[in-house]
Length: 274
Image 1 (cartoon, helix red, strand yellow):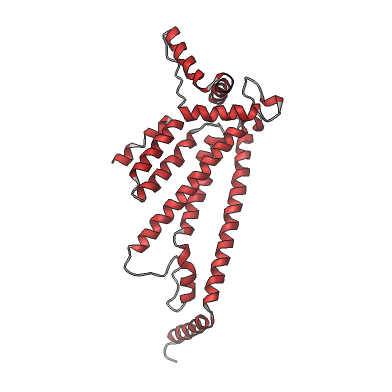
Image 2 (spheres, helix red, strand yellow; image 1 turned 120 degrees about the horizontal axis):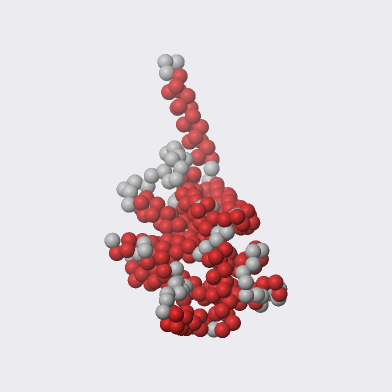
């Protein structure tokens, strides 16, 4: 035989065509079910491990805890819970007027509302150790605020997943050819291409979401110090998603809503104008 490589390639292609002819459309459906189950298991494992890692982060970072800011957050929330939500702002203004100074009370309405909710949960949980005027170090005391941080991180990861998938799907739709999908399969493997079509952008979207979910910077900030800077992220990401759908009014409203939690939200807002 003059060209053994060509012969082997030809025989391999014949085998591949035979396998493809043998596999029915049900095989593509079965492959999709397997992929979906694998993705759900991966998402669940990432969620469980992420929650455990956040608890570990809080317990392992006591030496770098930013206690001053956490104490202020608890104190303002406790005051709002005991004396009234608006009363905290009235007291701050009265203090500034009386002492002719700036109190630097920079809590936006929803940030104070979150701290008030923290105080309310601790006051109603039936544990006398969590019903006091001073913030305490144990995880159970700060857990309500930390759960809010975790929720913001989850919303951020979900938003990044949807954003990445949307961009990939649109990029593929703008191509003239169908391509081979996420797996560059041989032309004979039609069933495999068919099985992969519904998952366009899902794989990279999950990777992007995992990067956000396991981001050490946000994890240390939201569960180590802990602070509330993570609140900015989901509003910005979901505003980008709305802009991608050409919903500029809703995106602007979402940025304004985020500014009610943290005023720093307005710093990157200029990017939307650009």
